[in-house]
Image 1 (cartoon, helix red, strand yellow):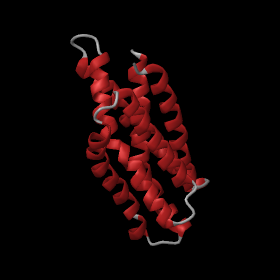
Image 2 (cartoon, helix red, strand yellow):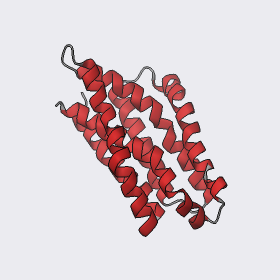
Image 3 (cartoon, helix red, strand yellow):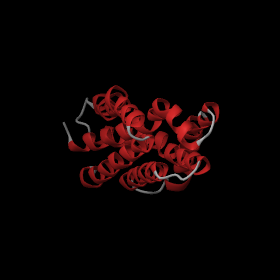
Image 4 (spheres, one colour):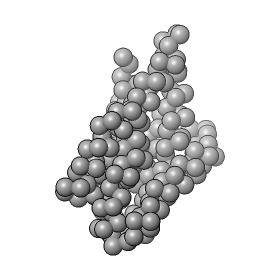
Length: 179
């Protein structure tokens, strides 16, 4: 397997944890920030809104940049949004950071798919894209439950910190392995 595809899969794993991890820790976040569960549910919506805004914004802003630079910027947004969410002092800041965390989601999948196809061996483009997307599957099977566990027994902030640290690893691998 090509290292580039592993780096891209690390990125999609981080995005999967970022997107779906919120559902497992929602009640702990609500309790920790002294808001209602329906109000905490807006943290899920803020991420989704970021996803909707991020892809077209990336096209508008970065369409002339090399794909690797775009991936690095998107991974950087994932890191920044999640690490800031881990230290958010209140609901408003966490809501804003959930929006920021969602911005790179759709664009990363789009740009990552293009990169995966370009590095694929002839006749294996679909397989290359599926390896990249495998990160999302692994996130849902293992990392989201781990984040929920950490959030329930230690602190919900650890779930966001975990995504931020994973994002740093993805960022480093993209910088090193993506052509």
